[in-house]
Image (cartoon, rainbow, N blue to C red; front, side, top):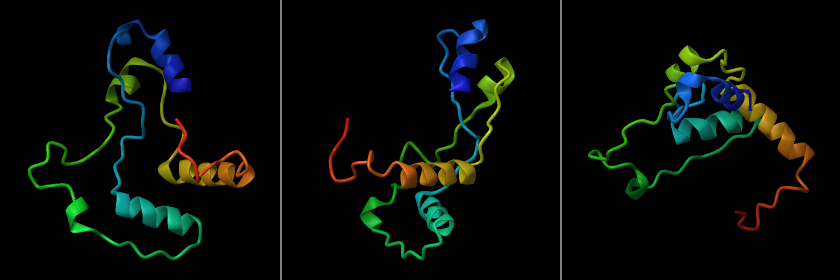
Length: 106
């Protein structure tokens, strides 16, 4: 939320595309392993070759470039990926009655 407020305060960023993130990248497989580790769970990851991104795909890697917000505002990331996952897990534990995994929500 603070990042969005900082963007609104900045005259330099009006109409610009701004990335707000921690400027790190992680594969889906490694993300699943990290979540399992934080949950103290053991998981087996199955890979389907047909779901692997093609070599000639236009997107090779996904990584937030937050340099524009860092250089034009006072904002900086307050969370690591691990801290964000951990807090999300705790929120889900505390609010599981609000979470509806069995239905599609828009």
